[in-house]
Length: 471
Image (cartoon, rainbow, N blue to C red; front, top):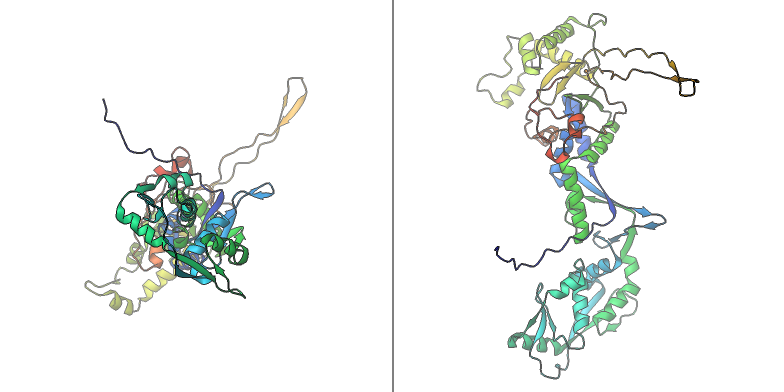
């Protein structure tokens, strides 16, 4: 027989609030990334960039949007104007203000009073905060209990919180409660035309709601928060909602990719698919260059021929081939000394020609440094003429038969028609343009699984592909 488990059953988590949560890359960071992509000319997998953005909360912001249910809002959003914290009810917001900003509105004063009459042998004490509430049969016990729950533990159901109250029979604890009751606290109102003295916290709560609440709490339909602030919200339900949505995007950042592609598009960047239909972002879409039909320099023709003859060549290999006598970096030479040396005319010419080819889309230089040519597009099959066939009643009907083969783009794969990625998949990234923009070295990026492969797999189980980049 198995051993009996005496532990309390776990409480089911409360339903997540009905609020839309959007994770949006920071605009300044996207602008910096766009400049880096334009500067290097390299093509980066869009999902790889999105994954790197989501690794650090400083790289994105979170936007909260209310959801309409007919004429009503499913879950209102309340903002405290004093510290811009977000709350799901006026009650929670008011309790937060009276807890954190009490001294802004009221001044507390203790005055001597009468000790409780009678004999008390036990008191109730909060098992979480240690606050002594007094004997359960004392006249203000229930008031104190509900106020403590509202001010500090409002995110916990009242019945659950009530079960955490323990009965203490310790003589010293009972004596401490009686001493506390020998003093009374009164409250003087601040920031009002005429000061008043309030004798109970209930009176303070009522005065705050009537006098200050409308001025310090506002309802919003859209709220934008920096990533670190959003992930550490004071409201437990809201914090859980935001963290769940961010983790969903970290597992499969489709929504972030869609937003990121729109932001890159505004920066003038282009999109295309390669490496088994993985969407890349670059300075130009691949465009085939027919050197036989297009007048170009002899140097450009040689570069094109070299890249075509050597699969996955790199910039270093290209320069070493066309300028074999040039030492790119002497052995033992520091990076500063190498940078101080002016490049040779041969290297300058190769770099200039390669820059033109990349920015025209004739050559694609991927994030791992490999280069390939934009391939010649495959002609689209001609459209077939409509056929006529008889239906069940003997009448003729027309049926259009059309070929559905995919037209390959310049890279041998279909280009993104709208310029915005909507259904592409990429592997988790190691390091990419984000790390480069931050000053860290760039490691070679591997290829990623295709859209078709993802359709048969769970997004969270995406495995890194070992395929080499190919267009």
